[in-house]
Image 1 (cartoon, rainbow, N blue to C red):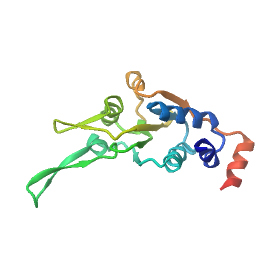
Image 2: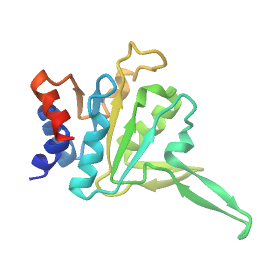
Image 3: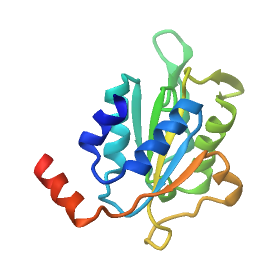
Image 4: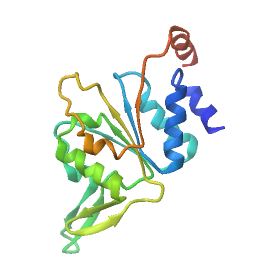
Length: 178
């Protein structure tokens, strides 16, 4: 039923939808690779809505810092104490949009959370939410301003899925559906 609902909004990507849902059900993460405009972000948004998951999105940019992903301790002047401000990784379904547009140091903060299901902030380890899953999108490496994910970090993903262009019939269906 969920697959059918997702397919209503993500047209022409049946294999990608199937494998992404398999990753979700098996506790893995998925990397979606393809040019902009192929419904990668829409797939993740739709999965969150259809499955009722707490979902967040990080737009990876060249100036994104590791603390923007994991969170940080901020000083509260009213209480004279530090309080944890959790980053967007503290969710069930995280869309890491264009993960390869940010420098390796920030990539590694997310990849550590994916592997260990924990985040360490100022020496204190915090556990991720139950069912934590990352679906990352990656632009083709040939595009200007991208940083390749090292092979050693690609093993954090259960699937690396190439998202291709739909055929003409599927494109017409997508236009008519919206």
